[in-house]
Length: 299
Image (cartoon, rainbow, N blue to C red):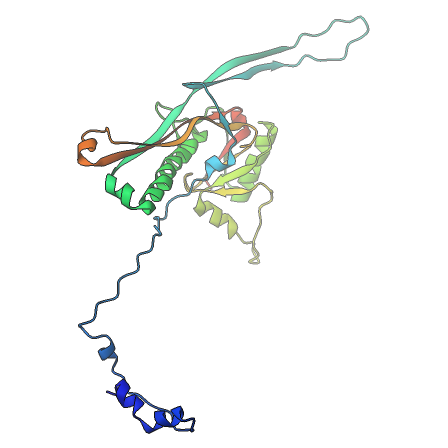
């Protein structure tokens, strides 16, 4: 192996120092000598980034208006259940026909969705990344579950009553229709029966893909015969779609948005140096006009 002293003593090197042209200098350097067993191993680089696992995103709650409420336990609104329109043309001096309208109160309980997890004092004191991670991930877990309840909650306490279990929503079976035609019919029935304008079509990713790659007999892709956007979310079961006017006739009534609390008073946590971290939300799904929504089956 050639060392630095040997290199400095070569004719070629001396020639270059004096400014003379010379042949290139070739060194046979043993890499093993540079990384000898007596030297310290390089320290690993630790990134502060935390990579979350792949999870179903929150999506349904993003297409529904949010309204805050101060009522402690429930949401009360008035819903018209009778409309008799007797308006008619009247001859001079003739009688007016009597119309009949009636509204009744509707009550929806405010539900609570929450979760908690333990952590040591040291984790939160010594690792800002861990604290930031929990501040994001725990609320996400709550919102993800709430998102699922908006669609599928059965309304049995303490569950939210989701769209698909709300009495009075319309249904449209695919039957012998194409999937596009069945959805188009659902959009139409929302307009003619519910007197509403559909703002979204909620689809499972499997069904959304099947629609996207639909082709005609010549291999050309077929596009939807409607301009209502698709909202893709695997919270809704494959084979089912939900069409509706989410902007005008649905509302997320929030008593308390997602809140994160930390305490050391749980069990023996004070004496063992642990913390309990809790997150929850108190809210209800208010469907003002069930007929403004239609469930499509058999896709």
